[in-house]
Length: 182
Image (cartoon, rainbow, N blue to C red; front, top):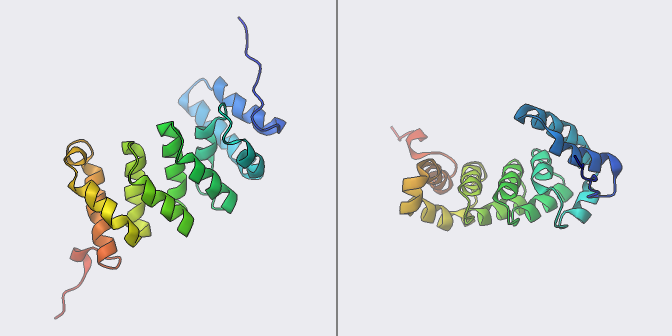
């Protein structure tokens, strides 16, 4: 049996070895464990990731997933590039990571992600709007809430969109949570 030569994605041996090791995972739990080992390396070597991210063979999903909770400008740059990836799982990981950020740039990217064709990405972006509450999201949230396709295939996303609309329009409180004047 031939084994493939490990790929060099970034030129940083420990990071490349960790990325290559993901292919050796024997179970979902093992993969998750390897992702946990990858995360500190991704954070440490973000500059190399920024440089290598657009290479066709670069493993975007695990890197983006490792960035969840990281809010540095380099991390947001990588996430913003990831949200445009052709692979829906890479876009999903990028949206999950961006949803944990609270910057104007990450919010703008998530507002644009409301238009994503993937229900995974769209669902994460809609849910993030409930927390972020940008006025710029209202037109697309209304479109999602009124979409027959979304109502049929993603009713949870429609419910989240309606909640986000209400939170944005009512200054952060759902209408049933506001007290009526006595």
